Image (cartoon, rainbow over all chains, first blue to last red; front, side, top):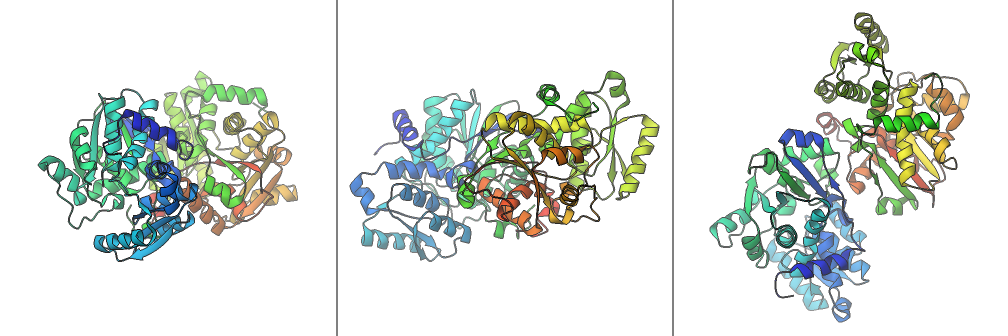
Length: 319
Length: 319
């Protein structure tokens, strides 16, 4: 695939992955609606396989490979959700997943990768060490690299979240998702363009990891330097494939504070009784901080995942 | 109503409450099924209005009153979920709810009652003080007392949980619910008797509040003395109306440890990504502690509620 997924590619991805991922629920909360004086719909990818939307892209990418490629196995470097999702996808296809993980990755994430049969090589927690580790593995195994977001097969997989969302909820004024590397928001924006073009797409980013915000408004790629946010799924910077899609199809990028993210996460935990990870609270924080005109609007929010390391989390005394 | 609800009474209750409560989802988890080698179904009353199944009984009771009774208002003593559910039901019928609450009730629970317009009178945290406070209020206002569980209208309302459950999931070998005062399990056992008589009913109780277990197996009412459990919704003892229903229609009562409750709660939070309160983890703890023969069985578990006081909870460092 050498161009952004079009509608037929998104439909193919949906068909390819449907047996292996959940068609997730959309939840609503009257008390949250009352609070914001708007109609909010939450697409719950925290209920997705492996607890995160990344299962979609990983399945689509792995199931797109031919037998020769599959035989070699797949590989990536990741400290988090993509690693587990890729290991799961590989195990379903009976092939190997070689994962380069920083040695300071959380125990829970390491366990999830191992649980799906992923073969882990630890590295130093720097991008340089991760990339070198991956190069070495590819040299040894000839495995196919599946990048967490800078890959059109991944983007097409993530696009199925919004496709399902529009099937269940009509006439959304806005669709909102968090932005990290840009895989989810790229897929969301493409599905919106093809299926519900009147819906505006807003990406929300932590102020303390605002490479996408800067890149979008300055019109050139500006990577994050030492990003530091509780929304640990959004530390990565945009990719060469995601940035142009975002420039073309996303209407707006806004940033939110750490306090807003924590408050939004607590609101969802308490009112909706669902566990979401900090990265997934970022869109609702944009409403708490009045970052766009949402009153009386119909707003679709993508809850990206629910993977929390409780051992660590409960010690932080956040709430 | 002067006898236990029969099938037609349960159907009437379902009809009466349906506009005011959620028909809650049933969730499943492949990873939890794999863990126990059984098919588990979770009926999510944590997603219910006011975050708890008690909204059903409260609506059924309040909407069963005639205009003259309604005019006087309703009252109860409760430190928890019934108070909020009753205040909500009263507010929908535009009548008053007088709630006697122990002065050490959690701030979150007090706020919930106030949020629904309940009129709170605080008392000392003893049963004596609660009952005296209630007597005084009834004398002053002539309000109708709605007991949290020892009331057939309440039991009929709670019976609608299992009714919905059997509509969605067929051929359950077991249906399991926590037992405190016995309102939920009485309703569950009656619905099971009328709708799915082959399904066995198991009540699960914290070992540290085991009045129902003792009463059931010794054949006489034995109240808890100083019960002390993290499952704070299950501190109450059985009532004169619930105990005979339980004796007749419940197949088995088992008890579980505090450690088992905490482990079960964590399992549901982590694997299913839903917030449940400790009382709701009690049934799954019975599987963790091998309290009955569940291998390869189809098991319906009622998740009773999801009201957690996060301010307090996160300081306990439970997980």
